[in-house]
Length: 309
Ligand code: KG4
Ligand code: ZN
Image (cartoon, rainbow, N blue to C red):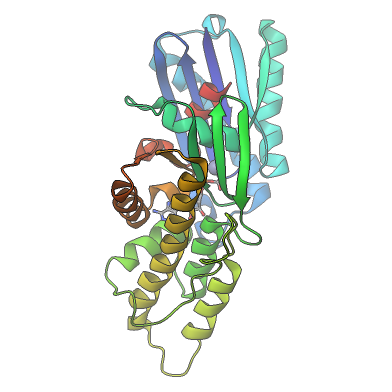
């Protein structure tokens, strides 16, 4: 069965075809980073309009890439939510219209389920059950995944998501959109520990997170007298270290709690190399293994939606 996947929940237009026998046949992605950069964040109306512009093009490109025609597709999966309302509407309208025109089923997919299952697209996928750490721009969750569709929420953020904290912190210290990867790059030049930031809820004995206090602590530090632009790298490094420490500690506690040795990391923040290194080191100590989606499938994409469909 061949499933066409359409992702338009935020600032990336993604299209892919997944074949249940042959795997991912091809995928195309357009990022709106350049479009939103001037505004310092995603402008929903511009995002929707750009999805309208890009989606037909990407559909054609993906079909050309895979040597298929629309007639070769058996079902159409699309991101139904969560996401920006207008942006989601573009993907769902196109998917539903194509479904009616071709007489094939459409499959509304939960965006987070797409992220959650994306490591299963890799050459060496994890086997069920596993613990999933979902770290995107809108969500931070720990889940026990027993099978497709069989998810138990262990804990989640009580305020900002991890990616949101990266983005807001980046903005506070004057970095450009999208904040996460830019802040991670700057952190490479800095030393954690020179500035001291809190590790929120590190010892809360549950699987919940909180990141908004961390952001406030960054603001207090960055606006204190004497804070100079050249101090930004050290502050970025300390912020990243604080966020990573909490994420790793809670993920390991979740593995222990579930009695499992497989951790799957998904969502945009899963692209963070400091997080990957710290998770790998902590997991190795517990004889556990961490599975990541391929780097290009960490952030939003059509492949994970086609696969989930
Ligand atoms: O999963 P995603 O592409 O979109 C959502 O569903 O939210 O995640 C985007 C988030 C953004 O907050 C972005 O700043 C963050 O992932 N991100 C990163 C990195 N790459 C993307 N955060 C930290 N380090 C990175 N390398
Ligand atoms: Zn996402």
